[in-house]
Amino acid sequence: MQATIQRLKFISGFLPAILLMAGCSIFQSKPEAPLPPEPPEAVEPAPIQMPPAARPADAVKPAEAVKLTDYSVLKPAVWEDVDGFKQDDLAKAWPAWLISCSTLKNRGEWQTACEAAERLGKPDHAAAKAYFKKHFNVYQTTNTDGSDSGLVTGYYQPLLKGSRQKSERYPYPLYTRPDDLISVELAALYPELANKRVRGRLIENRLVPYYNRAEIEMEPSPLQGRELIWVDDAVDLFFLHIQGSGIIQLENGEQIPVGYADQNGHSYQSIGRLLIERGELRLEQASMDGIKQWARNNLDKLRDLLNSNPSYVFFRELPAGLPGPIGALGVPILAERAVAIDPKHIPLGAPVFLSTTYPNSEKPLKRMMMAQDTGGAIKGGVRADFYWGAGYQAGKQAGAMKQRGRIWVLLPKEFKLQ
Image 1 (tube, rainbow, N blue to C red):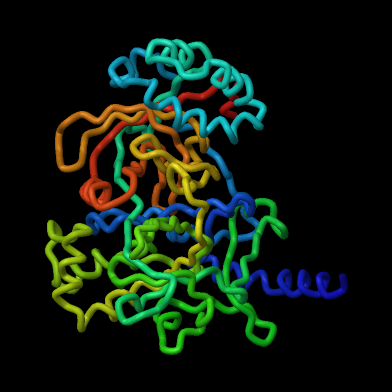
Image 2 (spheres, rainbow, N blue to C red):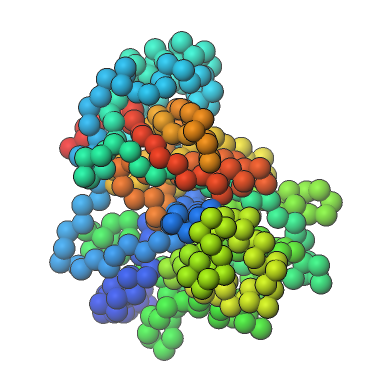
């Protein structure tokens, strides 16, 4: 007990230093069980797309209150305003909605709607449409400047080849969360900093930043002994860090799902943007495939490029058989029915109707989605990251997606915006 008290005194005494570190290491906290991933950092589809996770919030002064939610961007609408609501097959969105309800049903404002959904079973389109109109009000999402369109990007689960053992073919490790990584939940000391945390490690009673990517990948690594699995490609591993979850296929055909366990606290730096700044790629070349091709043609420059991003993600093995990766809501997300949103403006778990276009296309993409994930660069009312699924084709779609779109949010009639 005395040791615990001393530790709390130590953390409290070093809070100013912690807050200085927060400029490059504050992230949303997540529940410990189940431990959902912080949002993936992003696909590197284009240099102007910011990665969805590992983006630092601005440092917050303890004396300043933080407004955790701001639903003023949600404007009352009517169902007829929802672009595409009549055309989408809402029955296809129903499984994703029931997954949201597995968590939301324990929250008072959502209980009635979720209980009604569970009683409904497996509705067809007409029954699902009637259900949503009966139990929900609809709001159009706007930006703080009043505009009603914004950026829609994409993310996915990469598929990598790997092994349980290190070998010449599989030399690149995924690391589990290190024991010396300290996460400080700032709300324990300052309630106005709820959902904020800083990370570091102790050196002689000082909390210092955790090892960055270059330090972790030194030989020998300070994380030696924490290897979870080994893969065959450093570039694919880098993109796995960006996405935050993926699937490792072993030589015997077994597929191992891996997910985000923690992060080193350093801010993400876009290598696509850096390649453009260095004159290595043109803007139109800085897609995920373009970056991978550059890497394979410039192996002598690759390590320096990757180390320019100090952010580093630690992984854990996920249970087999999940229908998708674990999102910020703490539930599996389904391909093409889940989006990452800004939870400051859109309640996490809510059904949202997205009206946009397919990647690099003017073909309409109008679909009921579930706001089941978040991301550090997914900021603003009209901002979404579309989950395309797992594997190469999903990655192609995600890497090419940078569309304009509009969003409507469905909230139970019991939900209070204020």
